Image (cartoon, rainbow, N blue to C red; front, side, top):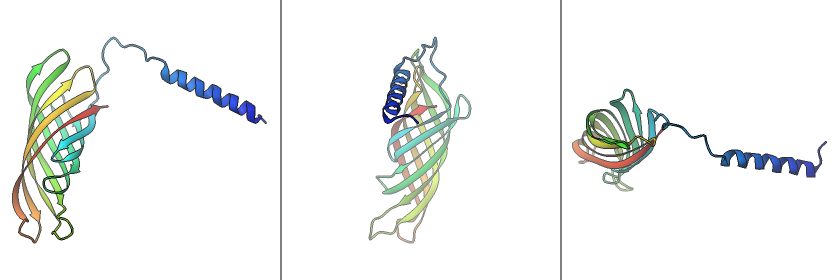
Length: 174
């Protein structure tokens, strides 16, 4: 049976080997790594939360977000089918496509202790610009969406309504 001292030496050698392995530089690649098709990151605006995007083809994707709706108060979830029909700029380090598409939104309006909380669902039409880095698995976006929704509430704020979503964010691709 190993002694306490020998176990400590084995643990120290193992830890040192792990540090050396993690600190060793990765082999250099002649070209940048392939950017993945799934990205996840943050969006700030309406909503503020987590944003994700999955490319189906080179110019078509499904994107969505879940987060706090500060203007309406509550929690919002949306998903859009977008396509990138125009490339506004194409440089060595980045591409700047514009995108448009339809989507769906669900929102839980939290009206506080004395208010009538309710759920609304609706259709979105989104348009945006994407700053897509070529050397990094990262994109930065700015978008705006018009929303037509129906609120399921017995109060005066239920029924058919219109809203605007706008946000900016970044996503890292795997």
